[in-house]
Image 1: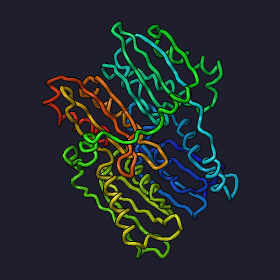
Image 2: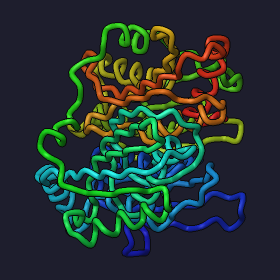
Image 3: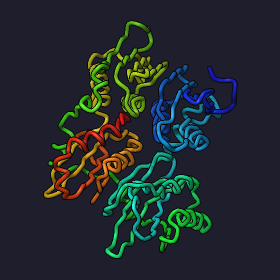
Image 4: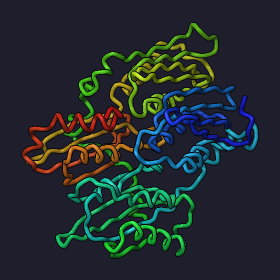
Length: 439
């Protein structure tokens, strides 16, 4: 099994502008590899329109046909690099075990505190937190009240291969903005003077004369400890967000023509269980399926994904449990199907609630067991609010444990504008369509 090339990842451009690009991955297999690859592709703002997976249990061969949905050109070289990093090392037939051991024994990367100040400018919020080009695990707390236009400060951090873990932005009455970023460096060079100067120089090139100061220091243990998840959510938020069912069909009538169906069939293969899914497409659909299977320690031996132009998707996955056996236990089958239905019908929970005189937008999504959150959520939220011309007064992002699951919860305070009360459904609809890729 494999391809006639020594390259782990090959990206072939389309023959015609309207055709998809083809991503080919050939590497040692591991549980959750499909999830990790789909997450990287989603992170770069690409949509998977077709996919094929096959493995003999040790070596995996994957094909993704992807299309660009955003206005920004895809950085294919960086995408290839990130996909290669997600793959196990193919040094030998024992590559899977070596990879697994090395990844679990790696030390936590050093955390640095980037501080810079500049004069207020429109669009610092939406542009600054653009995260479509790099891996972001974000906990954010800030107090700006800006319009949502483009500034792309985080694009600079992306190009420098710096990963944002937490951000705090505040404004002063004299119009200055103070930004604090907790960062880790993929290159592991941010402790050097040259690397720090490079970072500040690139930021200054974006902010121009409005930038006042820029400092980078190693974060203290107390600051680094802020990366830990919160223990729980306030009861009111739990009731508002996590006990209600979101009806997305109202915001995408086409979805009603593609009812969700999930089933497990053990009659077609002696060694594998066939998981069959029929549903309507949404942004990150294949990622949602793969992360659920990864959390359940399911291994895909063969799979096929196809998204039609009308939005209907058909997914066939031949899977085994982590012990190499098919899913015979009916309770396990029911639990897997139930979780897949829940994740595909409501991958995100979205609602508006009143907080005194203000209106607060709440968005929650489950975190993978490995600790990774869903890509692009905050960017899509701010993008949707920008399109609706709604100003943000306060926003906070954090990790919270509810029951036996960890959630990433986004709280966006929209202020006390009385017109917001009359446009609640419009706000929820706009944010939902942006997050689901139905805009």
